[in-house]
Length: 369
Image (cartoon, rainbow, N blue to C red):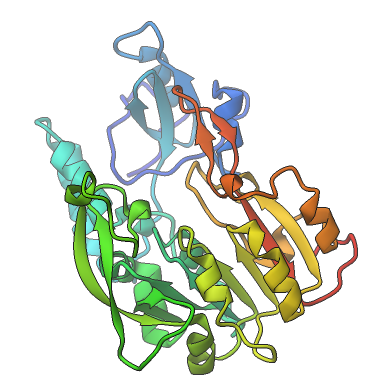
């Protein structure tokens, strides 16, 4: 798929395999949109008041990088050609989908679903494992969508990821970055529930998987009213302390397990502590102090949001938020459990950001990591 020459009269095609690019002088994105954009995004044109959004196609013809236009509601986003990751496993099915999509005029919705199912966007931006492996270990406790683990792997870190939902782990391992990292030993993914103490080996618990919102899955039995929204499965359990004994002490441990962070933190042992950790539960401050953590900061997830996708945070040295003592956390306006979750209004605007508590064994004073 070749880019159009500037001011080409050729009509832009529709495409599945396309990438965002920046066009600051032409972009009509709102301030809220830009707040959620990664650095290389975006080139959006408003379609409000027009049925065909012809203005977006006119701009695409005049923009050298533009090869396709993707419309969603009242907005059209200009896209550039993909750079296929030729050696990634699973590539061919995505390339076939792209070829079929360009030639088919009937209902394309099933093709969009197949594209998302196979994580085909992962194949369109070139080789994703170009950074040398640094052999520093990160624990991703609360794998969820896998965005955190993907980011850490692309930065060269070794990653141990844990989630109680086995379907999320299976889905993550189908993505090329994680598949290749697993083969090389850089990535370990475990379907395990996290508890504060395991009474015996090979112990299991019932885990309730929400049928539509995976983040609502829980070990807490649902009420009779909501029971039909969940599927009960049996999962093996472990502790964060046992994971450290198995894989080694991590440089950084991210804990985000939907209200059960304290179960992980209670199993940590002095002498085997991550240098850095983060938790979505700020009320674990006193326990972290008792373990020996000395520097703290509250970090808004807006600092780490990329492309509108929720992301628990980058590695410690990349987050430009100053460290402080515990007293600075106690007086922080977001030092409460209600700030473990963001709030949205009916229009999708964020009224409150989710904040994580970050802790370090190192005394940083008021400096960055």
